Length: 162
Image (tube, rainbow, N blue to C red):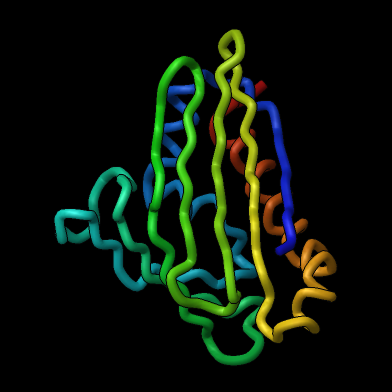
């Protein structure tokens, strides 16, 4: 299993950062255009479509076509964990089907004197067995631009004009 992590400090309070990341609109705003993300459906744990908050059990069915190259890749991600307490918040999504053998993304937020530390922790396995495992660490070359964009955009949208 390979791991990727990135963190950024955002000059915005934890509740604001948490609420932004807890919605499908936040996901759309934080996904770079080059990913060509399309949300196919969002189904809450109660079966209702398009819930306002991504609660545990919410399934997000999406597709993407990075750089408009190749066929669209389908991906279903399910929120498996969500907690907010004592100045910390986390939620985790796991890929149920998609292009990776394993994808577990933990989003962590830590409040600190009116600011928030935003941390993405990703555990993943590429397809291809031992070959995928051997080249897994190289996948960060692809993840880095996407996560750099996500963190820069989070700051831009939540910190406001300086």
